[in-house]
Structure formats: structure tokens, C-alpha cells
Image 1: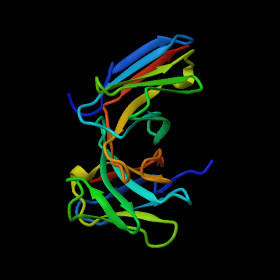
Image 2: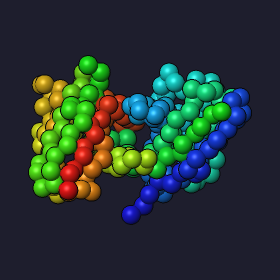
Image 3: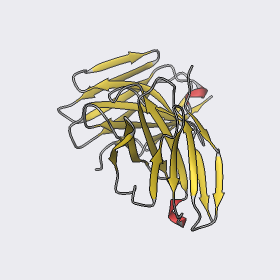
Length: 113
Length: 112
């Protein structure tokens, strides 16, 4: 069964550094999402992406965050200058259409030191 | 309560018993989805129920939706040790490009 894959599984970064989290969505899916889950807390929506542009973003997704689909297969989340509070599990998801189930990757655990 | 609140927060049952988890939400929805998360892993989609549906089945899973009460339930029948996980409901408010709003989750433990 097709899967969403995320790399790396764990990223450790110094505060203030830039980090790029990578995702390969399911190949025929058109909608892409990033969520995050701080340890012990709810899964929170960050951003949705369709037709090569952001369609919705949360208040968490400030100007330190950006997303890109650089080619036909990858979907990336960049955090420009990381803060301690960015430490979380980041999940990528994709769906065939907007009202279809979202399929999640196993996540990238981001640890900011 | 916040959008997507599950109860109970934790549930322990014997293998073979049925497990019922509930979810309440506050705003109108287009659909509601249930996910499972094993410790340290990603979210696995279980079932999606649309706002015009009242009940859906998938294998040992049964989901109900009551839009008048803004609530949903997930029933797992004949539980197995492998069902041990956290279960989340997530609501999608808009048709189309839908952000999911997740609940706090129910931690289900199946005792062999």
C-alpha cells in the first residue's frame, strides 16, 4: 500500500539554525499538509498546500516557516531560525482530494538544543 | 470543551471485550475522522464519516455520528492486544481543502 515517507526520522539542531524537513507524499495525491505534535499535546495543524500554493495556514505557521514542492515528488517544511519551542514531532500528510482521508507519515522528531 | 475532545482519556479492558470511545466537538463539520497512533509512530487513518452519515462500519470498527449533539463514538469489537494505541478524532470544517482539528485522544490498553 502506498505510504507517505518522511526524512529524517530524528533531527537535532542548534537553536537559531535552519532546518528542512522532507516528505514524499503518496504519488497521485493532490493535497499536502504539515502538522506538529509537541510531546504530550494534541496534533496541531500547520499548513495545507494545493496547486502549488498554500491554501490555509495556522497562527503557528509564522514567517519563520515555509513550505515548498520543489519537484513532482517532494514536499518540504523549512524553519528558518529554530527556537526551543519548535521541538516537536512533525507530521506530513497527503490526500487524494480535499474531502478524502489524510494519510500520515511516521513523522520527524525535531529536537532543538 | 475544545473542538475534538475524546473521553475517556484512558481506557483499559480485557482482550476480547468491546471498547467504546467518544468524541465531542463544537463547530459544524464536513466530516469527522478517527485515527490510531501507536507510541512514537504516525497516525493511521481508520475511518471517515461525513456529516450526512450516521453510522459506518469497517471490519471490527463501528463509528456513529450525531450532528445534533456534535458527538461521535468509535466502537472496537472483540479487542485484541494489537489494538493498544491512542485513538484520536479529527474534524474537518470545510469542504475542499480541509485542515483537521484533532482531539486530545483516548489511550486504549488491551490487557491480554
